[in-house]
Image 1 (cartoon, rainbow, N blue to C red):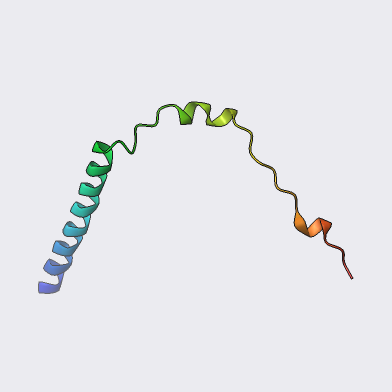
Image 2 (cartoon, helix red, strand yellow):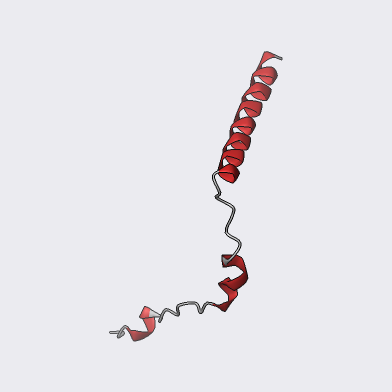
Length: 58
């Protein structure tokens, strides 16, 4: 029975740590990029050539 209490306390401690990290990142401005999502679809993706097609086979 004591193992369950220890696991519950440990999981609450880890969850509160993640919550505090999330709140800290929101306050520091990590999620304030409002420009990039709207124009990201306008950028062209870089195309990479398949290097195996240019390789000569013996």
